[in-house]
Amino acid sequence: MDKFLIEGGIPLEGEMVTSGSKNAALPLLAACLLTGEPVVLHRIPQVRDIATMKKLLAHTGASIEELGAELGDGSVRICAANLLHPEAPYDVVKTMRASSLVLGPLAARSGTARVSLPGGCAIGARPINLHVMGLEQLGAEIVQSHGYIEARAPGRLRGAHIRFDRITVTGTEDMIMAATLAEGETVLDNAAREPEVADLAELLTKMGARIDGAGTATIRIQGVDQLHGAEHTIIADRIEAGTFMIGAAITAGDVLVKDCVPAHVAGLTAKLRQAGATVVEAGPAALRVRGSRRLRAVDVTTEEYPGFATDLQAQYLALMTQAEGISFITETIFENRFMHVSELAHMGASIRIEGSQAIVAGPRPLSGAAVIASDLRASASLVLAALVASGETLVDRVYHIDRGYEKIEEKLAALGARIRRVKSK
Ligand code: EPZ
Image 1 (cartoon, rainbow, N blue to C red):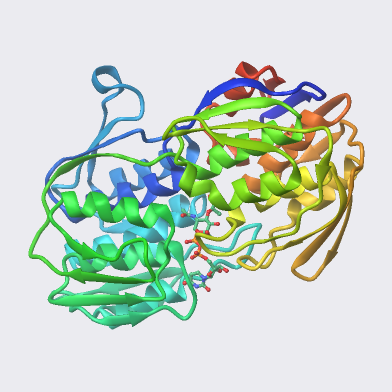
Image 2 (tube, helix red, strand yellow):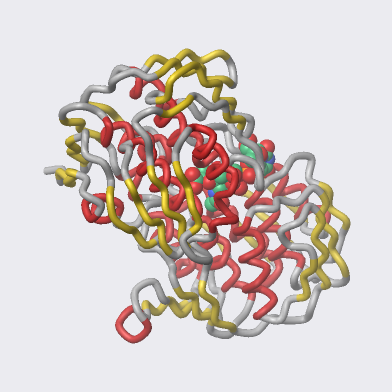
């Protein structure tokens, strides 16, 4: 397993270009299953989860053409003309639980979908009961056996009024996709408002879908008989942008984060400013972040968008280990998203966990150590801590970070960080 060797104490300085959003690319790739015509997507990040989703689409029978040579890295053409195997097998799903995103498209397009039940992961049980509930309300018959969820819709799905008991991002995305080909109108209440949902709706609309209200809590979809091909450039990765913004703050550096969407990181921007960092908009798609050696402790509670993103909680917690005072970090989305805390404590941080709250006492000088990544965002937290720690840190199991960050060590090194990948034997 690859490791990162990082020497801390160097401020990040310079500029970085944000990649396309992993959490937009995943549903948008799944949306290609809804038509037999080619769909071209640009700015797809080259990360492990995307490679897994491409493998899954190929398994179903879709063709995938990498267009990097002619249209630049990250461009792909997907054509799902022949859906021979409308299923997501266990060996794919076990490495990427977002495979549940193909449930809706396959059920809607081919009348049947067979998806291995995604297990839990480090951060929580991650059930998909709300996806199942939505599909049943659209008229699919759901059978669960041998670790698989099978959705059968012999006739066409029928529009329904679906209210989510709790906000679910991929649940919302799954149901939007299923509803685009259903008979009649579907209304989604208590829908997720994340920017990735709106980006999915933009692609689907280009494909001929009729969707209103994406990005709000109530989304209306008028079903159509079929969808056609389209071309789309996906939005910037707001979590990558936020991670580098925190990198500038924690190292007292000065980083220009380019090709991002400032509105998508407004929650983080407000907290960084309160903590004493300087964040200024440098044009319509860039933010300049300057850190400070004297940061103030500022509490955070994670919430669904537009609240403070749970996917930035681990990174922000690392920052608070360097802030003066006590900060309360409350995680409301997942039940076990403090796996980074023990590793940060191993580096010298002072953090106490009480239920869904982590209480951080700062500032505490961090010292380099051997630490182990447990999940995608926890690994980003450990990298950020290593950048400010004295001495060398060895972060193990960086395959977690490779799931969702494109060329992270190159981007950090270009900002002056002393980081290198130690290949496993
Ligand atoms: C998406 O996961 C993101 N992944 C996650 O990013 C992100 O942390 C999460 O949304 C919350 O913002 C992708 O978009 C691919 P949820 P998702 O359904 O859709 C519970 C990252 O780091 N729930 O919004 O799986 C669930 O257990 C990843 O990039 C049910 O109970 O999250 C959780 O407590 C990690 N039943 C809460 O809802 C369901 O059927 C929110 O989950 C579905 C979800």
